[in-house]
Length: 307
Picture 1 (cartoon, helix red, strand yellow):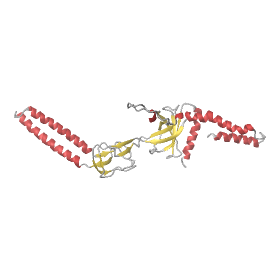
Picture 2 (cartoon, helix red, strand yellow):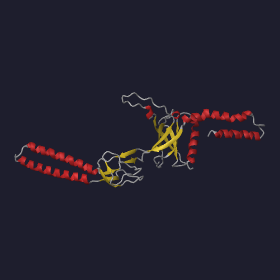
Picture 3 (spheres, helix red, strand yellow):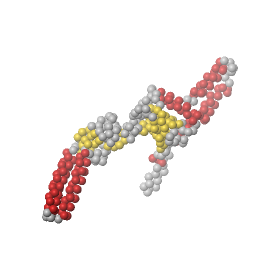
Picture 4 (cartoon, rainbow, N blue to C red):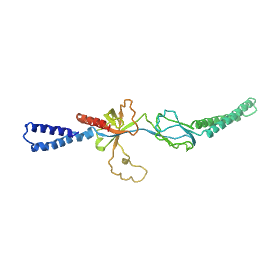
């Protein structure tokens, strides 16, 4: 971008020499491009780095580990890799035999307990048994009912369903694999809520705040520039944190930390695939008269994405 005014200036001088307005190339004419370059760098392009920072952008999505609530061998895997799955759809099935037997066993115990309670209540009406015996049987019935409810929940949990609309990036689970309760067996991506991250250097973040206008372009959609705003600025890094475990804190390693600004883009019905990369620009409240240069640069990048 900085070469454009220099080329225009040299072309203007060349025309003046050709027309005879200037007899020859003077020393000031030869060094003027350097002066223009230094002036443009100091006045326009260097401040543009923090007044309208442009940096790499990437799309990430939330990932949830699917953890079955019960253990057992897998009998069927319905989920397929990179295929949209609706909320509530079956991901995989766990062998139901043990849990179905537990439900039937508890149902039988409940039927027996209720029958015994009915008999005792009849005897109580005849004053043939103590009321405490009936109360004990009532409590036993309630306990068995609770056991049945838990057994039925375990049976239902043998069918593992999608917690929300999303995709499984890689289905490595196979029938006959044994899964354990509480142990994740597959990743599930929230494709409906992508997060656009712009990774900024330390000298770019100084004027960036939430609510400022932003734009982004991605290689997956060449030629398009998406409008939006800054939805968050995360000014922290793991290397800036101490672990308070009672030990003497280690001296942090000095590294060139980068920070992340998240963008809320108007996607106009477009679905950004997770991992999409591109460029994002944030237009702060400073140096607004030169923001158009960054806008032009970003659009040039968008068209270069075709190649």
